[in-house]
Length: 333
Ligand SMILES: NC(=O)c1ccc[n+]([C@@H]2O[C@H](COP(=O)([O-])OP(=O)(O)OC[C@H]3O[C@@H](n4cnc5c(N)ncnc54)[C@H](O)[C@@H]3O)[C@@H](O)[C@H]2O)c1
Image (cartoon, rainbow, N blue to C red; front, side, top):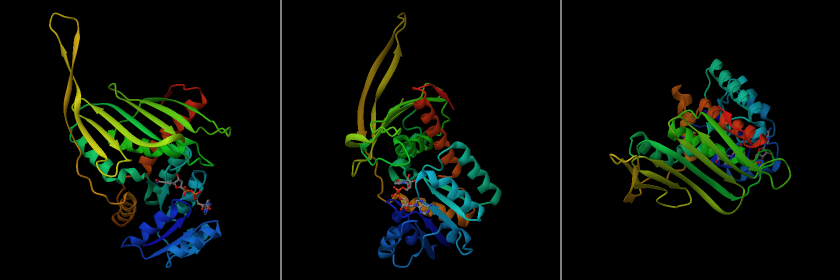
């Protein structure tokens, strides 16, 4: 299989490296509008071919699939053209800047029988897979809340606010782990640069059955925190991505609720049990993304992080944006 990779900035070279390691890939053709990025890539990866024009990739009949690692505002037009040219497509997160565009790409891929995938990298981390396993096997019981913090200093993006840049990770993790349809959300944010793009945001998502989720996103934090807390009726999970080992911890903590007869009162007993950290492997998540894309094309199957999964994240991003611009208005999904 021959691959075209468009966009060789910060993240693109990681894609190039992982595709070059895949046993089913013969040729990698790289494209960037910036000549300097092409020269830099060529120094690291001698065997790649390079071009400044994405059309060279779309028109090349020997290229089977295209990977789009350019800024968010360019995702839709490049992905659309790649699909129209008969190429399978892997797009960086988030899939597109609007729900309408995501739906257009999904329909186009379906009509043409092509794979459309989005790089929601975290779904391929051993930590998130382990949490999914724990939740699906009912180890933590009924889920009460999903509480996520992703904060650090920068990187301020030119074409996206903090929600569009960071929340695709957290929304995709939540959608994957909970596998539930959110009912509504409200979001607040602020722009301290003065360019109309929020650098801090809080998003609150409601589900049925009293389940709530909260996301704290910030580019103006003095410390880097990457944490998710999941509270369940039986156990609780803490996922701390800043930890080198023991990223996932399972706590046998919580409350037991008892109703005392003859008293109109509910009693809360605290459960303070053991905690443990399950063993997880250390394989690079992007290798999982690349393998899933290649195998989905070869086997004609849907990848875990399909276009439809990408759409679910874009729906939450778009609704968050709408709520922020309307002073935290509740948006129904
Ligand atoms: N999955 C992850 O963990 C992760 C991490 C970082 C970035 N990303 C995503 O990767 C994408 C790129 O981010 P980045 O930080 O690498 O950006 P970047 O600005 O560093 O690089 C983008 C590159 O694309 C090139 N480019 C722009 N328009 C082009 C076009 N029409 N044709 C060819 N080349 C073009 C630019 O010259 C630049 O070199 C974004 O969608 C971002 O959200 C994902």
